[in-house]
Length: 246
Image 1 (cartoon, one colour):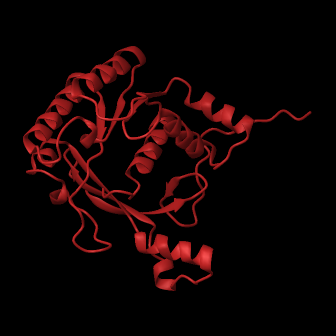
Image 2: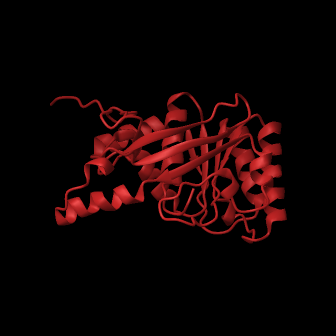
Image 3: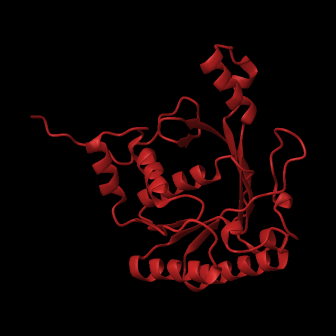
């Protein structure tokens, strides 16, 4: 997905659902501090932008030992990252491993051969250790405003998208987002047609296992940072807080 289109937020929310299904996740978010990753996870599990102490405790207890974070900011060599992921896989049973993003793996943006080598190494790692690796990559800049990406837009020779099992494309409706801000800050009504459009889409562009592809419309819930499949849906409270009455 393009810069600023919610890739990290989308992926974080997918991991909350994976944890709810019994998976263990390890996130190497090389572009942001570990505490920010935790704050987002707490927000997505408590459905609160600013949870109180009890809600915070409930979220952290729910995440427990099922969310592990490689707290390193900045470029890192692939070997060091794989060593951490291997430790998380063997020591904690992590099955969902995240690298955010490819450009942080000490590789030049125009070194397509090295990018292809990294992609193949990650696929081998996932196969050999029976886990799934999610790697964030960036496409070429959009030619037109509002354009949605496709797999052919991924930077490189096409080797990356050819080698992997799945390609998911994240796109945010920037036009609607700006109209929403104008409505909140300046009182300018949002055009009705625009209000009916989704806030984002998740495109299943490649699916090696079943071949099923789709463009999934999504609506973003600000308080919980969750993506909903219908504008009338409620966010999922993954970590309910039970208070004892005095």
